Image (cartoon, rainbow, N blue to C red; front, top):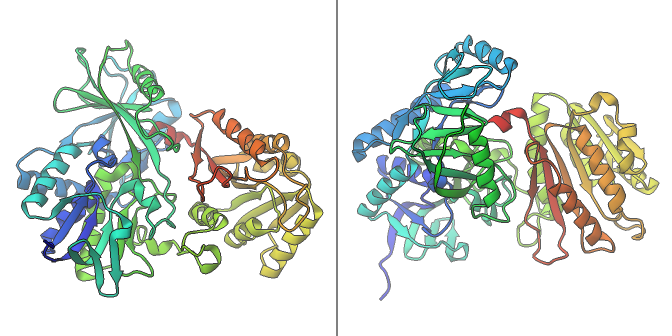
Length: 563
């Protein structure tokens, strides 16, 4: 027997914190919704500690729009607690361990700032059992959300309202037209994807520059009497309401293994011991791993597909979901119901849909287009803050140089290297024709010599270095980049790159010698100090063993290390 057709306003895919709170807000506005949840898929919300911390990083940066975001989140959870009849948000002071005198002084400077005053309290010289030779700072309006309790209660409510389906969603099952969408027996005005990091492979939104990061946390118990506050000293220790503890978190862009790993457990336990004068004993209850749906420009992805007005996304809240989602869920719900503006910083209209020139017949980005699209927010962010210094380490026919020069224009400097004069000539012609050659220096030499040609003033200040290995297209294919000089060039690049700067590497194992070069690059990446650099190994564009491989190296800032 055929199921009766169900007509609704909004179909939401994913019942993590984003999908749940958006669904809750839409129901409050009178919408008829259905949430589809694959209960066997990984969910970062189910793993997350739910930490709530408005001031983060070594530089102690206050969350943007904190004056709106923090009260909205607190009011949302207080309302839910009354409606659901249980405690969800647990207020806890955070003790921040200062790593050095400079951090201590920075805390005091921030504390005098009226914008920070509601969140930073006094400095204290010491706290019982905590190892803090430079003292500690008390942070306020911190705590944690019991995410699992909230998600379980909201799921029960959705089920009671016949608004919940436990099922695996296949993109191919979705039909859409100018009138709305259809999925199985459901006809809806719109569909909104809230699938966390898995939306990076969503066929409508795979052009958005996600930067997912795996994180692991431990749940522990201890017979030792420990402070009741959250302790933050690089790794953090969170006392839970049930007498247990959580500690975290690791950070890795390598998504080849999504399960908990032994080395992550060791890293967390070692980091935990460094918080105390005398290392307490902990018993492991459970180790969990999740993937944060981070974005390249650190802002959420909210809005409708530019060509499909019934298909939307609500995603990209990274590791601050418990703090950010209530604000943005309210804003997006108001947009859907009353056509108010989506917050500008989160609206996906800020990211341009690939043109036909950079898209394959299937609508997906070509490899070069994919690289350019995902690097674009980083370049724009740097240019917004000041000059952008970039290096094209393999100029070739000038495609990468043209992309970089177009973005930088008069706001920085581009250096382009190639060992072949023909490549330098091709690049120079392309830049001149586009009228963007003024701030570009072209250098005909091997990229392994870049340190000899880049001014010393740029050491440690270059924001982006691009490698496109292999041979010059439409030229002699026997002239290729070599693994030995490529590794020398990467060693030079590491010395040039700025904090939060990036090195992009495209390797081609399919051409002669390319497999050895790609292997050498992989080996070089594995040897980079993990506490200083994040390595991103992107999924290949094609599934074959000879498919081009794209890697990124991100130099960590001290702020990222201490969060």
